[in-house]
Image (cartoon, rainbow, N blue to C red; front, side):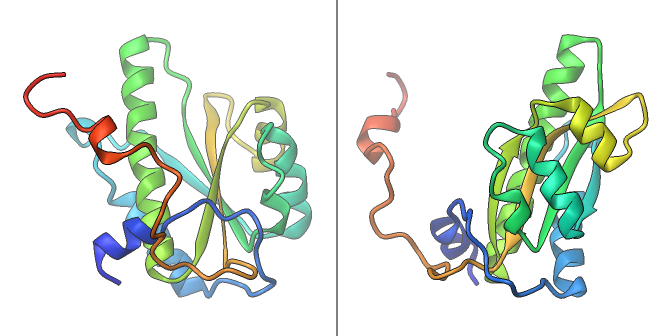
Length: 171
């Protein structure tokens, strides 16, 4: 798929078919995350891939908007250190956001849907993922083949008009 088609086709998918993701495709998605842009090539991330149904069900309790996690074929947890310095923390979160978008675009390129969630309960995430004490899970990205509605370019996205959000040279 062309990059522009992947961008136009990407949408949050929260209902998945029972079809598993082939390991090579999952590795391709993870490689996209690993290669995501990072400030000064810092790469402050680790990725934990969860495919076990029971573990996915438990992980859903980590986020207020993570109810789609148990139905996914796989979920990738984006993990980082708990930085004390605000500049480091914000930069690391920015880098994780870029890794998340790389995951989502690589997935849509393979016809795989994705749905993200912010982790609010670190206790649940730490227990389910077995994280070391100096790490925490910032985000989850559920992956799976969309149930009912395949990925294709969205013609009329629920987005603000182009002219409303794009400003040239000044506001």
